[in-house]
Every structure is written in structure tokens, then in C-alpha cells.
Image (cartoon, rainbow, N blue to C red; front, side, top):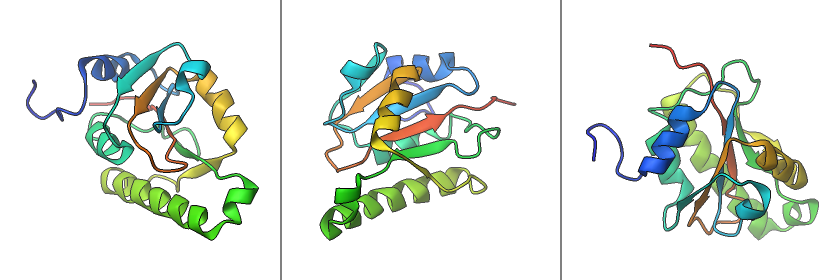
Length: 150
């Protein structure tokens, strides 16, 4: 254990965050996300929710200031947007992420919505995928790392 670092962050996740360079992306997949099919660098965070991980990571992680939108979510499919229950659930997930990001980085652009299949393509190119225990629909998230300054 280390002081000042959340115990939610495993040694392998901390190492991965440290090894990432600027513009590298890390994906946080929900419990149903096909991370193993999309990327070889998988970190298990079973049982953990993405909100808690996001809140633990952002004090240590600089968001990319060069990218227009360094925080991205998988956007719902058209048929899911038309379903008020799913659309409402998605909005709750989005609002929770936005609140956490704004608490750490108030000047960050709004969270981008990435088409589901474009999200999979980005996952294939990502530095790593963190597979979580989050069971909320469309909870998948991407963070782009920026330059760490002191």
C-alpha cells in the first residue's frame, strides 16, 4: 500500500498508467465489454465500478489538453436512444462521469460520444483495457493521457 494512492488501483493498473505516453488511450470496459477480443493488454478490475476507478485515477492522471475531447463514452445505438429507460440510464452514467471529471479537471471539454463500433476500433488501438465489474449499460469509457508536468 502507498499513501495518497487509492487502494482501488492495483499494481498492474498503476504501472500501466505510469507507462502510458501522451495521446495514449486507456479504455474502461463494463462487465459485458468484449475487451479480451479487442486488445491484448487487459487489466482486471473485477468487482469495481468505473466511477470509483475514475475518481481514484484522475488525481494521478493528466488528461490530454491537445485533444479536443480527451474523455469519451460509447454512445448508445439509435434503437437504444429511442428506449426511454435505456436513454435515461445512459444519461445517469454520463452525468456521473461528467461530475467526477469536472471535480478534477473543471476546464475539460464535455464528454464525447463515440459510436459503438468506432469505440471498438479505438479499443483495438488503445494502450490498455481495464475490465471492470460495472454492470451499467453503456458504461464504457476512454481517457486520453496528456503530458505530465510538475
